Image (cartoon, rainbow over all chains, first blue to last red; front, side, top):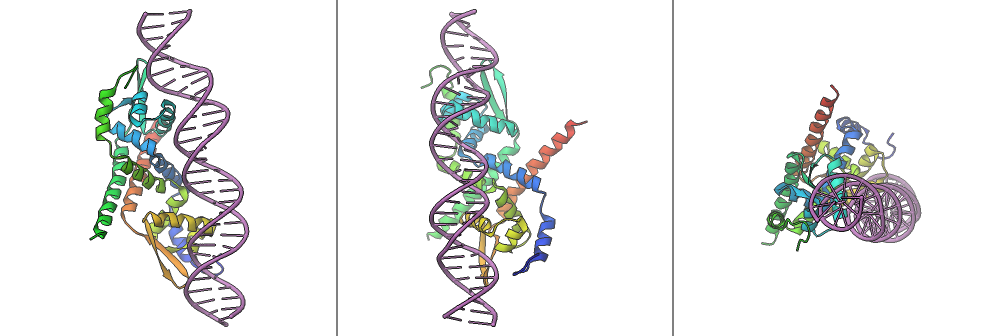
Length: 121
Length: 121
DNA sequence: TTATCATATGAATATAAATTCATATGAAGG
DNA sequence: CCTTCATATGAATTTATATTCATATGATAA
């Protein structure tokens, strides 16, 4: 297969260890959910309290429609749920696992910052 | 501020707890890195072994150029590093923290799958 | 039942991100 | 040197994603 520069043995070994394409895609899709500032903010807000759509819009100073679209994405991904209360829809975290994923990212960032602060002696 | 439906007190409370915009952005940017299948695959491959560019391209069956572009992104984000060896560039994980972030996502997915499997009794 | 509020949604638009293509760079070997 | 290999890079293109705009839905209160 390899013509010029051969690494077929490493490739085979690594290839054997890789999760399925489907899983890797799902994993990408999961992280993609956290890869948008608006969605991150919504999730952080929901860490503190369940909230209705217009409260989130007001909090983030964004249009209700934009928030609604993002809420749908988060709901489809089952990261959040909602319940009706009168004519408002109240959204809340579906799963505390979300919190730990985000916190792990948070930790990574704050550790990185520490390293960078060390540089300027 | 709120005219029709008032939730200013909740908004204030939540607002006070939110991290800074800058941090939330950085967090989004970090997760964005994991939110692409190509980059996820590259990182998974590097979990197993350091690899040169053409090995990764061959492994993922993608063009060398596409891989190179993604490697640059990962390197800028300091998730990976590289060293020269002759005329090949060998890339490797910069930080084991990356592994735990991805694994956390992985766990979330596999737990979700379990739930879904329960449904079909 | 009509008007209003809270939300959702489809289509259009704007924006960003990934991939390709052509080519540049830089190291080795002849 | 000159050629080849391994990689990088800029620009063009493609593709995906977020936001806006206009409007629909669905619940409540008058």
